[in-house]
Length: 386
Ligand SMILES: *Cc1c(COP(=O)(O)O)cnc(C)c1O
Image (cartoon, rainbow, N blue to C red; front, top):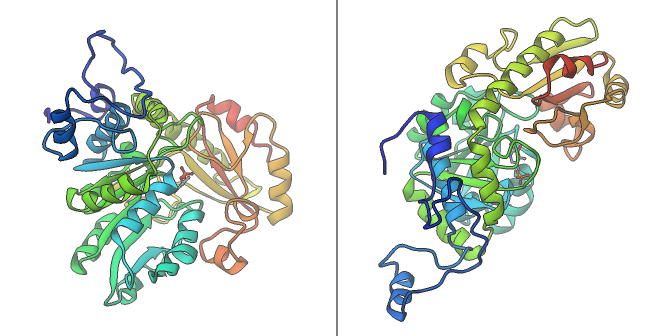
């Protein structure tokens, strides 16, 4: 492996070797399989005596470039790319857990992660307990003899609560738990969980990694000893990422640092506008001094990220009026796009939760999530018709 360079350089200069055509930008290897030089070469490839591509469910130059780049950006030893963020999460859990195991997870998880833990894994005898992000002092008492994994997301969606990664890393180490972090909201540019002791990190590449709202994909990264199991699982069960999407994501990563800086600039301006606004109860943004975990945010995140949430005065009715009053910004449920997106979590992304479950993670009827995009900040603020 070449010597590690700075983040921006790694994001641009990690590249598959140039072909005989001497192209400057990585070409797209849209092929399902690869040829063998001889019968002996085929035998050696299958026996893993030599390295090389065989079939795009196993490996492909475009997915390899994307994985290598992500490994270098997150500081991981190995990785696997998947067809979606959920395939990454499911692949990681299904590969490493077995019947009788228990998972300790943060309650504020992405909706489909909650469905995997509560509806799918129990079919195979794998159980879970949620820890409250606001009461992490209780988490140690939630660990059981059969607890095998600690799984969390920070910042949480949409409440933007943080979990101390250094503390979580120590907890996992003390109890011999596999420590897994969904790092989708922060991206490796703002937060690198492996540096705080995480064993594995997952991403929905659909969000800030693509950053332009074009393609679905995911990636699992981490320590070799766990990634071997994960790779065995994904290689044989088949959630492979398309080479085309891998090519898009790897290109997108070249601009990740520039884009994230602008997402953060704009999100800070939106936060300033909402802070103290007469029609707003509160605004939440990790790097704003009103955030209850501002010090922790500064410790583990380079900047606050591209998502801001706030509570509008007047509950559901006021929220609906606000969402319907949007003219330029997008009404959508996605995030991490160049286009600013406004979402009402209680009636959309988190509507499957009971009212009590929503209240427990701070999703009130008046809560609005803004995934701040890259338009001019004045125009974004100009469309927030409060
Ligand atoms: C979107 C998202 C996912 C799921 O990713 P997909 O690419 O939609 O499958 C998982 N975790 C978080 C935090 C997300 O925002």
